[in-house]
Length: 237
Image (cartoon, rainbow, N blue to C red; front, side, top):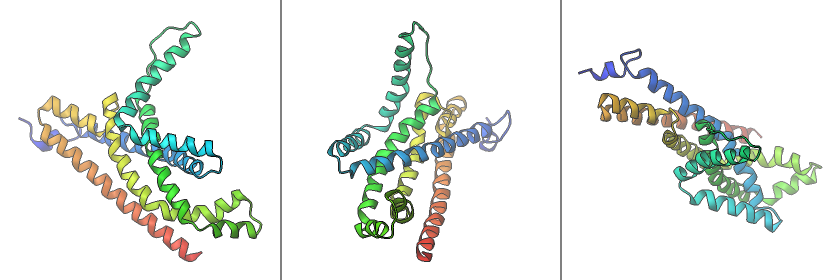
């Protein structure tokens, strides 16, 4: 029977290479999803405070849907629904073939829309925490709406929203484990394969737990430094 160290070693005899590759996939997926979710969430938050009722309604419907659906179900809808939709679309042009959708892209889209629905609420709360006088002050010195948002509102918005967005990042990091259900070789899938092959489930799933905890601790340290930088920048201004 192989020892734990040999099972976790790098090279042909161990599973260290596969687990490390899974860590890379997890981080790549989370980092690729983050800007997508932040961008959509920001614009949804702006839509939810728009003066036009139809735009506000659209923003509320968006967040209600994706906050109400389980993340795994959203992933399945994107992954399998996109395949069916593309197949039907190309079928209109007389092309009949099996279309496979990339699991990484599907995971990024699914996790991105879920992340954005929660991020929009964080941004919305931050928008409401900024006094209207800040906007009026920007207009009073001749700034346009776009410049007022860029130079006056956004720096404050980021500082106020940062704690909530930090929590969402940690949730996103954990939710990347869901993509193993559609075949993406992330941490959970790689450790799951190793557990089934070697019959050492406790060892490999324990390693997965440790890896996620390490990623969460490193993220918390990075977020803390970003928060300190944001507060120092605010004090300097």
